[in-house]
Amino acid sequence: MARYTDSVCKLCRREKQKLFLKGQKCYTDKCPVEQRNYPPGQHGVSRRAKVSEYGIQLREKQKIKRSYGLLETQFRNYFEKANKLKGITGDNLVKFLESRLDNVVYRLGFASSRKQARQLIRHRHITVNEKLVDIPSFILDAGDIIKIKDKSKKLDLIHNSLKRVKDNTYSWLSIDKASLSGTFLQVPERVDVPLNANEQLVVELYSK
Image (cartoon, rainbow, N blue to C red; front, side, top):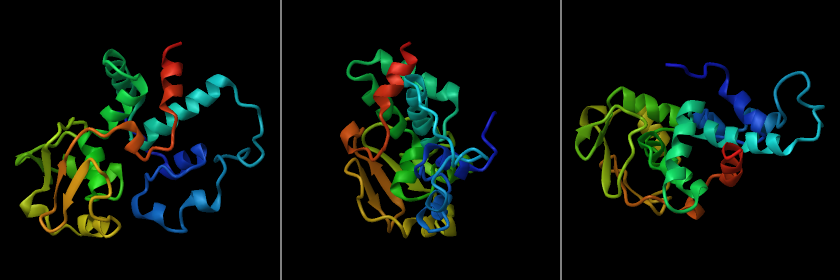
């Protein structure tokens, strides 16, 4: 399966904002965005060309796609599904992305990045409703209970990640740190999701 293998910090610098792709490093002053908040490459500092409407739309798409760690085909498929549902397509798209198991594991604080969350899931450390699930793209339903498998509860990376999380940070999630479990209470509304991007521009881009 295709995957991105270059430095993820370059992706954040290209979008000129933190996408929180590097885990704990993103929360320190070692984050490259803090030190060099301009696009990578030899022309990054001096790049002043006027950005076209298409360019603005493309940047928003890349920002969202990279934030959730998806490839183009995966992201486009979510858009197609969102476009078929009733309601605002952009809102539906974000709801799909927020309902992914890897995203919820990250939001609960069991992993310091979505990439790390995917590793936990693929290595069979996560259960959903008491059943092992090793598919990061698994879509959760309201009421689903996500737990760290009993044999995995001593993993340092999980406990180190939990240190940065306050109880019940997100209204659509409930976390129990003592039992290393959380509940996906409901699909979040777009207004509640801390995503610094304009998904409507993605809709306009794909609708051309």
